[in-house]
Amino acid sequence: MPRIIALANQKGGVGKTTSAINLAAALAASRRVLLLDLDPQGNASTGLGIARAARGAGSYALLTGQKTLAEVIQATPVPNLSLVAADPDLAGAEVELVGEERREQRLRDAIRAPGALAAYDMVFLDCPPSLGLLTLNALVAADGVLVPLQTEFFALEGVSQITQTIERVRRALNPSLALEGILLTMFDRRNNLSELVAADVRGFFKDKVLETVIPRNIRLSEAPSHGLPVNLYDPRSPGALAYAKAAQELLGRRA
Image (cartoon, rainbow, N blue to C red; front, top):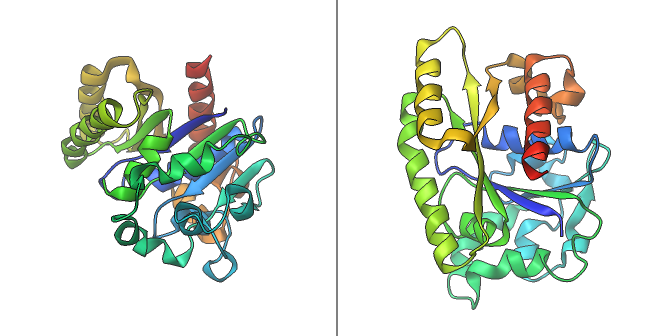
């Protein structure tokens, strides 16, 4: 089985989807990678050039058992990177699944079926900015959780909540779930607050915090509008270089 990593943070606007897209694309340079878009907003799908009208069946059909994983995987502009897009019906999935049996295990059952992930080395799950049933499915299916954390004061308030949720899921539903790491995003070296928040997070979480930080970078903001990860849009930009370094750091933590 490839390692399955969920990118989760119940706070929005922390760079979660940007990190999912660009880490997956960076790792695709040397690995076979699959990205599942579990956010009804579908930003990971858009950021990889898959227009809403062209998505067809995706993560909703997978969760509801209408399609198998092989039937919903599609290619992206990035070699070695495949995608399960967020189809339009995903917004209703949490309501529909509430009354279903094994509602928290739907994603795990679908992607951990024998041979389902045989073609991949790593899998990323892009979660919505909430701790609802979609995120819970991702945490139950995953081996590890990577928490993107914006280096601003209010972001600190949410990180304890996601770590508590990880612990609850580990106790009740997925004993092998681990905190893969915390990725500091939107880092501004000109801002003392960024340095203070980074120091606080490192002081509490120690080596769980990746050494690499993702800077504020206009190219990171521009790339999704072109349907490309930043390493294809502007490979020499600070954002592209930072995500390439973070991807290698993630690989090193697995070794």
